[in-house]
Amino acid sequence: MREPKTYFIRTYGCQMNELDTEIMAGQLQKRGLTPALDEETADILIFNTCSIRDLAERKVMGKLGKMGRGKKQHCLIGVTGCMAMAKKDALFRKFPHLDFVLGTNNITDLGTMIDEALYTRRQIFKTEDKFEENLDYLSAKRDNKIKASVSIIRGCDKFCTYCVVPYTRGQEVSRPPESIVEECRRLVDQGYKEITLLGQNVNSYGKDQPEWNCLFHDLLYRLDRIPGMERIRFMTSHPVDITLDLMQAIRDLPSLCEFVHFPIQAGSNRILKKMHRIYTKEQYFEKVELLRQTVPDVSLGTDIIVGFPTETEEEFQETCDALKQIRYSLAFIFAYSSRKGTPAMRWKDDVPEEVKLDRLQRLLDLQNEISNEERQLMLGNTYEVLVERLNRDGRQLKGRTRCWKKVIFEGDESLIGTLQKVKVHSYSHQTLLGELAKTPHLKVV
Ligand code: SAH
Ligand code: SF4
Ligand code: F3S
Image 1 (spheres, rainbow, N blue to C red):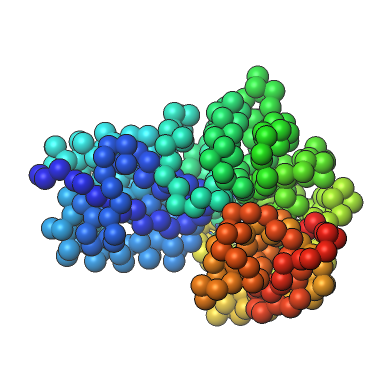
Image 2: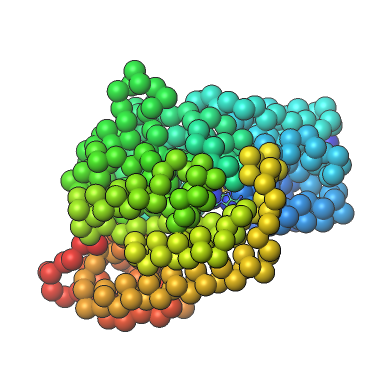
């Protein structure tokens, strides 16, 4: 078989998958491969997949089916990511043209998988349950030169009853703090302005390694001390593990952005219990209250699932009430999707599809109203914006506030990659419109 020279990785799913793609790209480039312009011309084609909902899987399955017909252009076709873990070698039966399947805990082995697949011409797979901390993070190939993601903990031990992640990513394994500090220091030296610390539950950081004496907030204090560190974010947090120590870190550390993704998932205690979220609505509200007392300027994001098995209209109304009460600035809302291998599979997926979609739409409309009211309150204020790129029209600049709000304003291209003060004068849909501030007054949000 001819020696592959180019690769293309198609990424589905969350930021963790995007980061894994950058790490895999780094490994491939170390072997001398270069990125292909598109899927069709790549010698090695990798699908880095997601299993979170049925639709995410169906997209990839459709794509893989089509690939069979065009196979001869490619040397190798591989599947990585969460579907690799969920389906393992069963993928070979459905897609005989697949060459390798590599699990989320084995991406270090990408090079050896490619060699084996090339030279044995057999279909091979490796999908181990436990992650060994041996990834080459420093070679990751990042397209973005301003913002970077850094993995701090992999896996999830929470086992929410609807969720595949504990099975597709395995148990929680924290990355040594020295390794994280080293990577962040290098990124700052290379000119990165914003670092997002990634994990399925970043607040669990360090709990699996008590001898390190470094919990999530301890890590944040260490990272904030890196000279030149401008902005730190983190994704995502389980409400149960959000501590007062973390809230105080958000209040006290200049680089830590005042935005917390705080997923409630549902507003009814019966549903929360069935989801195994391990908090009640009242406990959740109390924590939000404490966070808002500690960091008055904080903005909150959330994830919500509608149409969980047996959810009644009244229980859905409790979710609407929670949204009205908390007033998140950002909400990702999903219709429940029954996933193979999860405990919730035991229950009948009994909320009809049209009811799920109706609840989804009602909640989206409600959130939109809340977000618009929030944007209205921002008019006339000045915010710190990290200028990320030119807007799609190629004339204006686009960036985000510390609270992750998109802002568009007029300015010179040379401002890309800098922090600017922007006064907001209006908004259009989800985006704030503003102008470079002339006064020194700054309301940091
Ligand atoms: N670790 C993160 C979430 C990862 S998955 C956390 O706990 O916050 C992202 C979101 O997808 C979840 O928060 C949940 O809202 C949604 N999700 C997960 N499984 C789902 C399912 N089976 N059906 C619909 N949405 C789901
Ligand atoms: Fe899934 Fe729950 Fe873990 Fe989040 S905390 S990844 S929703 S099991
Ligand atoms: Fe999807 Fe896996 Fe992320 S299931 S959302 S790619 S952790």
